Length: 62
Image 1 (tube, one colour):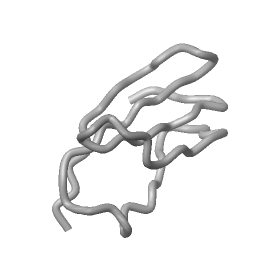
Image 2 (spheres, rainbow, N blue to C red):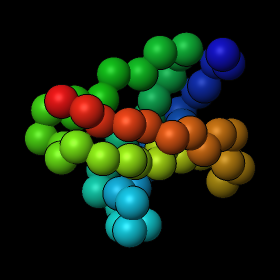
Image 3 (cartoon, helix red, strand yellow):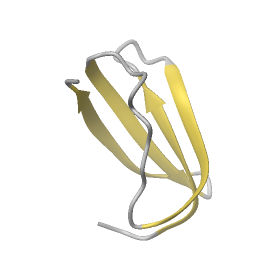
């Protein structure tokens, strides 16, 4: 786990389409409202100062 400051979190669907962008993220935890997302595989990219910090898989199984 790492500390982010003024980062942007981008969520992509399995087709690579950008479906959610959360800007100005700070801290060690992030809460994303996934209630409206369909079941499936998503990718979450965390970017800070134009540098990609992480790309993680996110599985929604409602």
